[in-house]
Length: 331
Image (cartoon, rainbow, N blue to C red):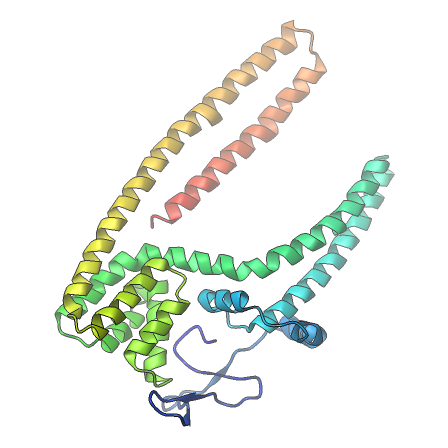
């Protein structure tokens, strides 16, 4: 599965064959003059995983959901190869956690931790290894969702470009070809590049390429846009008014979303002042007074150190990370 317009060969080194629309015969895919077909290469670790766990993976039926997520995430690896990588990563993680558990057990035993050292040494590999095996298969879905958010972030500006090209009476296939060249639109240009690959390299007509693009896009808004293009074209409608309408719609939706995020940032700023600044300050003062006049002694001082050295920094970093993530979606 190539992530850029081009062609990849299978593991045997042969070029794939595709059927031309309306024809039962297959034809060889030809690249442009001077271009070379590229292999979807695996890393050395992935090749080791595939050699080691190939039989185990192929013994199970393929997972269509995983294949769909890999396609939407533009991860250049087959689902069976990815599951082999999951098994290999789990084995390596289990060995690493077991070694770490032995080291922690020896260290804590030397300082007299006793039963706590044994429980921690047992829990680390027994809990960490299944956690790795549970998280890894869901990674493509996470990558696809991230791509979907990036597409939604750039779709308003991209639709302005599409509507401007349509106003100049440019054909639909040329519009997406030019959109694919505009890297400023990020993942939207990547989706357009796949559509252009289907039309120019694999020989599909533009409507079939748009249908395929809608099926593999991780963004619901971009899916609706492509399906609307196909529906408008097949029903005999005019695409120029449709592009102008969608550009205006996405612009209005983008403004409303930005306004909502700004209001959320304002609420978070007020919450930060109250929860992270004012409340810990009053708590520090109260604990300090109790330690002096309440007879708490060293226990209250320890609580004060935990509050100042651990809780307040963690709260601040948590708010900073959350606000940074929110502002990244606004860029």
